[in-house]
Image 1 (tube, rainbow, N blue to C red):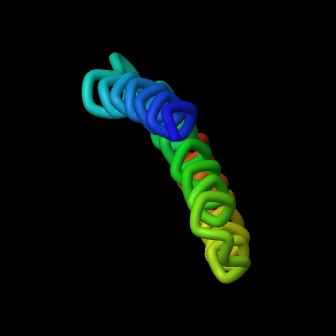
Image 2: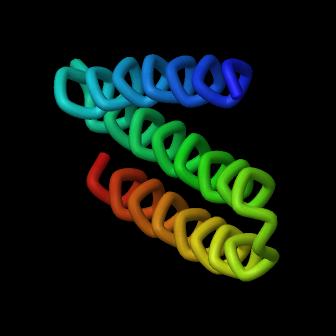
Amino acid sequence: MTANIAVFALVGVGALFALIRLLLGPTPFDRVVGLDTLNIIVTALIAFLAFVFKNSLYLDIALAYGILSFVETVVFARFLEGRK
């Protein structure tokens, strides 16, 4: 039980740092990296929730979210590459 609380706290700290990079990134590329990091953290959090609640439906949700976040990152990167 305390291990779960520690994991959620550390994930929250990581998400906070990624959110700061997303909001305060000096360049648009830093913001894309912050968004990608935040998406990875959310995907891992959903997978951890599947373990905590012992429900495999969360793994399907994590997989779909991971695929969509990858496509989102590629689209933003391509958009920023074309703006140079």
